[in-house]
Length: 402
Image (tube, rainbow, N blue to C red; front, side, top):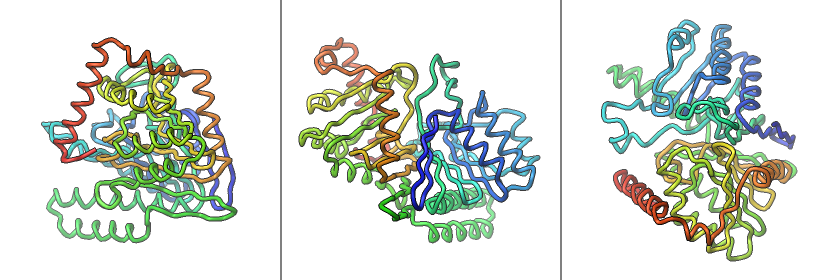
């Protein structure tokens, strides 16, 4: 499914599902002449994922500079013979923060690379929630009966410069860290200087204003931009006058966002949440249910998507503000991980996304009834409470308040 809208300053395409996303990204990679940068949490070579790896390899073999970064939890290793193939092709790749012997028992290891970004020749960028993972397959569950529900956006225009600067800066920081471990102090200093230069070139917010069209890249990290995505959401929710529609895979908002949603509902805004009905992770699913009661009591409509895993991280407010990205509304995304969202203020683009979400609600979601939810079995409510408590403990160990 491709939903496209041309607007002054930016050309945007809303991409639904990995098949369409892979088609667009592979086409851009095959046309590349100079450089490809790709960051992803999961790079899985099953099904369509192998197409992307082959496209990267083809580009590197014809002399394109290719830089790939994967996360050490989402992608702890690449299966043989791919590391050898990548090296032979000249493709440069890194694993961000691979886990040591203690794994995630070390609190700092919860700070993951969760953003999904790609930039090709400094002209075309991709941002969204879709990993390099076939929608018909899950590493833990195998073949899926229905495809995963997710979105990305393809962007052409001035915003691409910001994506390139952010990715280039991150690459040079990884280079510096690796060289420090190799006791190459001079090389590390040169890499760090390059990272600083990239930081000055990009501000993480670039707005194209032409005939009212605006788009911006909003990043989250653990240095300069700790609360950027949360603040973007809170501002949009606070400004809402008619309608809020959010689809989010792992929905466990902190107090400020939760109150923004409740206040919006109480002042007459229609608030709809499309969340996971078929869950991937037991603890996150039940921790989210611990918050359903207060949201339902405020008149917020909660729908659960049932055909497959909902993995989207998108929202539409008042039919004119929209966001597509990697950030969930949970503490892992809003407090710990590196994330990236594109925010668009354009009625046509927002309408395209809203129609896709409303179609999913009408055809594939069930409405959560407040009375039935409150009357669930004691065992299920106990799971909710325990999962929420464990989440709080994890945050405490990381020194975070939420």
